[in-house]
Image 1: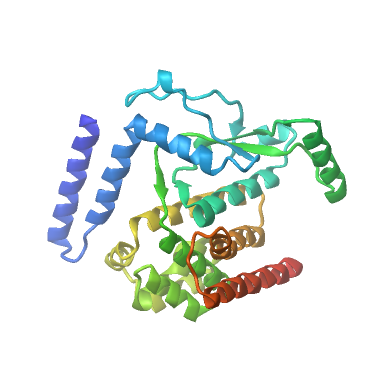
Image 2 (image 1 turned 90 degrees about the vertical axis):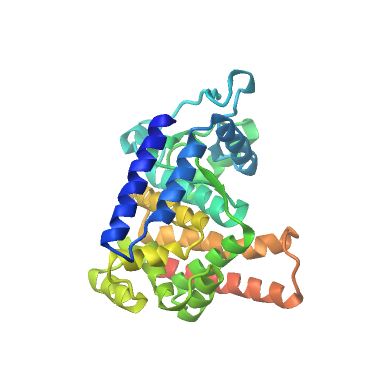
Length: 328
């Protein structure tokens, strides 16, 4: 802890020096986030709480597991959990050797993270390949095995059904419902090319003016051509590191971390063979479901117009997904 504190002081001093030379540049907000994250990662009692909460929030899914914490052998300095076997989610050779389909693993990863971001609101912020294992899903009973085999025959699936194992829950966050709903609207608007909806959702997130045009750069950078990226930079008014810092500082900290997480997972899914259109479909599907699911579960007090608009938006997105699915 002392070493981490000393390192943070050095970085803060360098940031202060940079502000003297480059008067408008200030990355202090980023250093504050980094300090907060490091403090949480070093507190194993907080990680134990995160692990239990994440396990409970995903308990309804059989394609993901979170090792339980052994409380008697854990403290603020030591964390002991159940042992679970598996290979790294990035190990395509290991996945294939266990008779699983890497593309199905990538789709499952996208599905799990999308549900955390858009539905449950409790997000694992560090799902890099070292923190995500994959193994053949254990069959709970004969009935489960029968339906899986029947599905394999009907849909011509090959291999065993994968199950993810999420490790290291030290860095998690609660994505508040207003931010989660606005982010879902933004994602659907971006996917459908609705610039008016994009600006409205960005305004709900505290990003006003031309900086709203920076979202396509953050969420779709790898899928844009060089010319498209340049056009978005011009439209958003981001021409330097100073402009980028000012634009990012407008975003809620939890959303910035969430965007980083979804970007990381999309890259991992791409490496596992999931197509660009399928990655977009998965994320947009959950973004469309988010508001309607909360209405149905009674988590939002809403008028009849809110119900109609939410379901209409979900329906339009689902129709759009079906259209691009047929085209791809």
